[in-house]
Length: 392
Picture 1: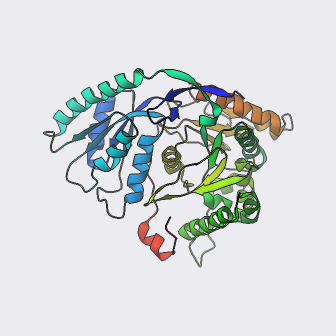
Picture 2: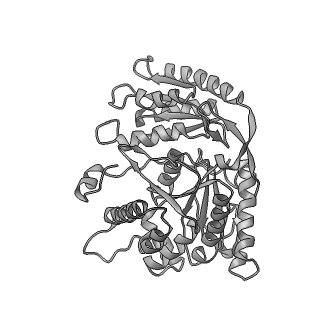
Picture 3: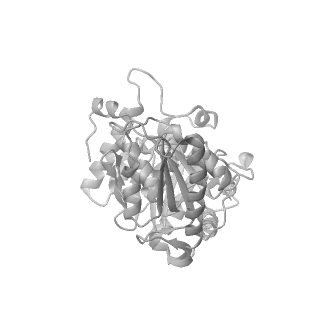
């Protein structure tokens, strides 16, 4: 594993491994205009808020959109809105501008309608792309790297191969001075005692246990036998939630847990020092990509049997240990662990080698062709009151 990588230094000191221009439609009425602009200016990524144009009760959603714009892989942003909703684009634009990012805004009603906004949007997007292209690439320390860690499409090979391989890679990254953040607390139900022993303090241990319980309350339906496990997990050979959780735990490695980062209407917590973190990043795949983006991750390590997702802001490295499901979509094949022809250490080296190339600019297997929406997800605030979650 290298101690440096090639990155784009932002005005606020952060470093990106990609140099995207973000087109952000703060309400769904601006989606078509965003798409029309990107058809003419392809070097852009679109995020659209399909939830609602109402602000009250959706502060968490606005925080996620703002966090996406603040992600170091984003060089600048064009913010669009219809002009009749209550989400003021300034709520998102101002923090980006304060971070030193070039930001342009267009309000469709005030800008004389759809066609004029598309014309103006194309010109502004081209201007932003030119500014991004002027940002030089420079060598930076591995300590500037934040790696998201998630599993999905899990099967019997996940807990034996891909999760342990990534967990060993996570340990190596943390030891080298980088930071890693794992999400999907619901996948860790039953692992609380193990995780508590890894927490750096009793306060972090208590926070960890409380947030896992809150996530269980969000998704569990009392009086039913339904477990929070997808049909794909069951078809893949996983039999119980406990079996899945202990397998998923491996991808977090073994290093001390510095904190559990919350994603709430009050704000999004950020790593304060290098190390290993957990977070409230959702277990829902598309939404998790945006959560990792909002946390500031530049890249995601994704463990799986054969499934996967893509995120246009944060590249996703897919790691699989299921030989029967390896396709050209998979970035790292660690199925040798299953056939006893490869050790976990050797598999972890493969993961790190791929990561080295991706953070230096090499595209992941489907980064260019694997279309994906930037799915936004937020917790339902009325439900939060019912399950008595604690504010930040």
